Length: 249
Image (tube, rainbow, N blue to C red):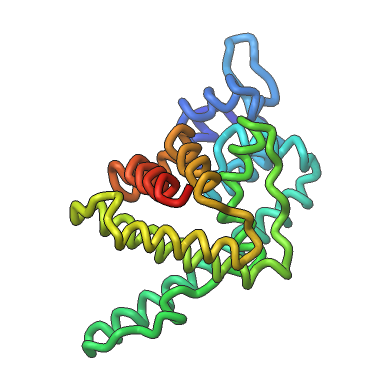
């Protein structure tokens, strides 16, 4: 049985405009276009649309969905992978909800949550999902293929993520409170952050840290990650790093 665009839109919730766009970008072809010019969809097309919607639920871009479907033409394999991703997201959401609930309960009691409980770490699959957008961006724009997340790395990644979050929170607070980038407290925080990176296997000095923050400032994707947290954050971080480098030549 074949269905028109309007019929598909009615029972799937996908707009006619979206279906036309999927056809235009070669993501979802109709089964046929009849003599009157109407797009008609069959069961296979509806199955592919279901896969597309699953990936959309996981916040995949349309271009990434197209790549995923091209890499996984088998419907069952595709569904299994989508199931794994959704389970990983559910586990992360459940963990976040549990942490939020504990924070609310303790907050009502006037108690402060233990820091280790405030920053629950990701598992391997959650890290893969969290880094997927950045991985795809770096591969597409710079041809750089980020290494896959290894189980042995997870604890170190969680520890590094916690330290990085604390570091960025301090830098954001400094910017919001009008603390100058060359202030002793900011410079000491930079020094401690760089020392942490080196203690955990990264070869970072003042000069290379400036290069890193310059990349964050110049690159659209990474600048947005910082600017979405606080306007001016990418420039402030770069300025602080430059000043640190000038004092530690």
